[in-house]
Length: 533
Image (cartoon, rainbow, N blue to C red; front, side, top):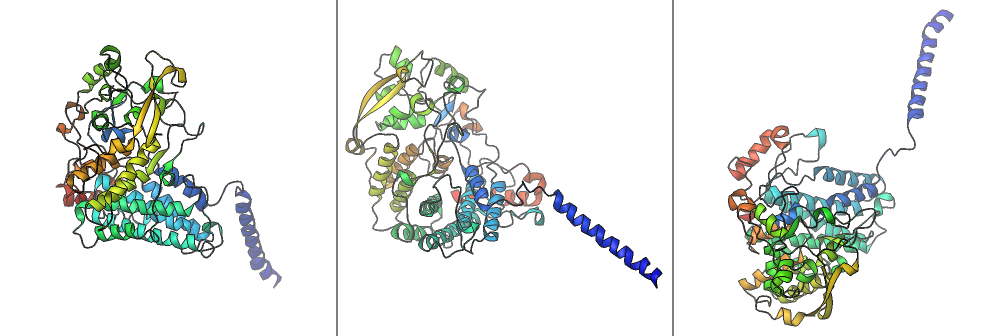
């Protein structure tokens, strides 16, 4: 009997002992100084950084705001590559939502509400760049490595629904902040844009929905989208759909030295200050309208001022290059100071520059004005919103409605953009009424009025909001974009960006199906996507 006990019981005891040691070993080797999960608030902050579209990139070239005159730094061609890839950021959005739910957030919580905003913002942006994209089957990881492509209509419809739901959820959270969970997942933190203010986020959600509705202006007959009805509901019910009321409500990325410098700053002025010059598309519209914003965003051509003896404050002294000009010719002309350069005082003299607006009040005003011009909100006054957009844009540059402001033009031969003494200063009178009453500015309730809305929106979005000005031109033809040898693509403005190169191999069948259903089987940058038809 003792032999039997030794044979079976002792090995069992040894097994338990080994198992217990293994458990302790796992616990002992776990690094308690490292987090075992990422808080929703930290994921949220990472997403906020990832969605920012900052100035001084190729997207401003595509909008013909300014141009490269030296091919070492870039070119002005419309030979589009692939569009933006926000899928990694979107995976973090899903992780943020899951972590909020796991740490005390209710079914409705700040992170899930803003998660809907992020998904609408990023999926719609990718779709506007490329067309049909993976959405409903995306973000599933190993469970689906070959997601189907959702139609652009499905992406836009789902984005509108997400925004509608986000507005509702935020409204409930604002009205009863203590009713939706008590843990970490119920408290918004690390908000670099609005300081955890859900009221401001709700305004941004509704501004994005109006932006998307305007992008759908060719689809008002679609019974599923209900473009006009959605627009009228938002504009007509500010209690349910709060909207931005001033520039203070802008969703904007603020630069803080020394953590994050404005892309144009004293450190890189010597390298890039003369490698880009202003575009005639932007500067020409400003001077045509005798717009005072030109004194803040640009500088006069030194050739016209110094050699031709024109006044530096004469609108005729500001000259942008034609985007279609051969780049070699542009380089030579820019070297002779024949073109205007970007204003050194406003954009280069500090490390913080100006905030980079992602979704802003001026754009919102012009979007509402456009919708009213289309007849989507009977009884509303487009001119009121149109004027508010112009005033807000000018105010952002320190231009008063009535009074004077100072123009700063960098003095030739100066060696530092940070020294005020290196700028010639001029007192510029401003009068909004005089400006507004010009035939090319004053609103009229017709097709000409729509053109003026779109022109002013283009001026207001200088250096802001990524591809929005390109999207507006692509949809409306306003303002007129010029082409030529310098723009490539057989003198055409490309209509879309290509799909991500990995799709050709990692998701080949769905990729090819998407091309066949939209663009005749080719990943064609000149193909016309659904939203433009």
